[in-house]
Image 1 (cartoon, one colour):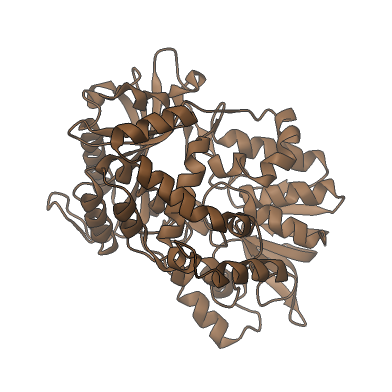
Image 2 (cartoon, helix red, strand yellow):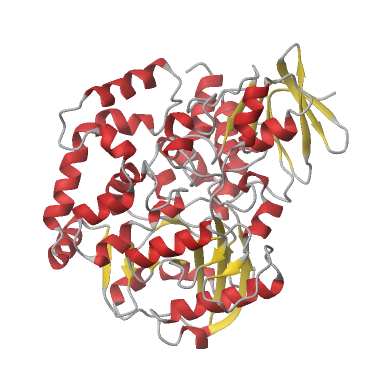
Length: 520
């Protein structure tokens, strides 16, 4: 019976980050993943045509590159071939009438853009109001919120009620109100507000105000992508992990976490193999953890009830395009790369999110546009391009179409997927004239595809669950966990997008659990 210090259920990027720290410290580690390769949502493939390298799921890694995990592991990852590149524009917006905005990485260029938009006072005022919280807030983004150190920082934030923008106001406020109160231009509002969807928050969800402020701090730093595709991060982490003796086993599904005397002692695979460990770390969601992996364990009914109510709000529809030439925006600054928001303004964003949450395909979805070849031409044959379009305001299960054009019965059929992809291309073409004529091939992923391929995405939610205040911060992923990584079963921990600080490529939960297990 194989035995290890730590077994990971799932080999996503957080598990790989944790395993890197643990293996370097001499711990015996085994990662088990049902996919054919490690990395979870960090993967690149030739999805359309030979020579066109697409990001299957995630694409941009600003939080990881700007965070402590990369600062500590970056040199090792570089030895394993990881290199990042980014353009001069981090993000921006495009409206069909030609209006646009950019958030450049150069401070002088950002200042000039804010001046052009008439937003210098609003931007400077928001940054000034948030500044007093940063000394306490920024460390919390990389901490287990149940620790005494985190509790002290949270209490310090909560005590400062005299600030111009108290932390409690940011925590309870929504992104829509903050963005429309502080900024006057539809261009800047549209550049920022859709980013909430990337972290599982809607425009009117509590805690959205805090995240809008954080995006204002983070995005001017850039939107880097790995040279060769997002999957290069997974490859480099895997190389580092195995270099230090850890084992990665793919194409194996863990069926249960085993307990003995109330403590986790190992796992059983779907093939019946039993592996034991001192500690088990699962990259999944609380409903799957307590509802399936711990189905035979002695768990209180109240905890199972909390987990069963874990909420998913919207799905993710992803369209990868192979193009015969690089596309062009009317504003050439938007051709510099980064993650761009293509939409019809704030009101339409609110409308499309409401349509999606009601189960309807949105009539005018907001598009997250990323052309990888803008900064990495090696991703496509010479002169060609690859583009990823994410639509994060789609229903998990489409029961209808807000435009009344697509017949939907609650499932993502081939017909629904193809018809909605047509709508997405047509919507993008409102911003990039002639786009449809450049398309050589396309590849689609619906929420149903995500649910089937990556269990931690639940029914197809790329954020691994709603991240509003009722299920975020110290309530993430369930109240019993309190924003920490320990479960109610000793020896068993939960990491990944369903845990604090939420979804995205950051390595935060992986690094934090490694520090905990190493006693740091």
